[in-house]
Amino acid sequence: MPKLAINSNLKTIEIGSTYELLDAECRGYRFMGWFLDENHSNPVTGFDATQTENVSVYARWKKLKEFYAYPTVAKSNVTLKSSVENDTVNIVSITGKLVKQVETKDVETEISVSDLPSGYYLIQSAKTGMSTKIIIK
Image (cartoon, rainbow, N blue to C red):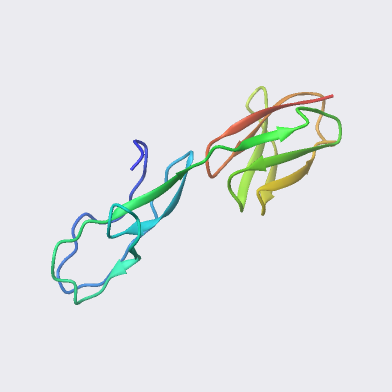
């Protein structure tokens, strides 16, 4: 797992009980699921009451690489390109004030910035923690 990964799953489970594995989280990575093997070919979502032996599970991760807006200098609209779908992005002023929040559905989203005053802004992803700079003229 990546160094800053958050895994809320129990470390041990009582024999004879059922357990559904929770997704792990890490900024800059997408969690792809739990697996019973290091090659990530045998997925697992949990265990039932018939589980009687110790089992190791392996997390699969995908490093997120893409998060940018274009044009970087704009008056009316910018297009945000991201590696993740269904994200909340915050547009933050240079002073750190949240000025706009946008829900994205796809990996490419057009954002209107015509309502923002001229200045320097950061667009930040709530899911990945990645950010990019834009200038509004």
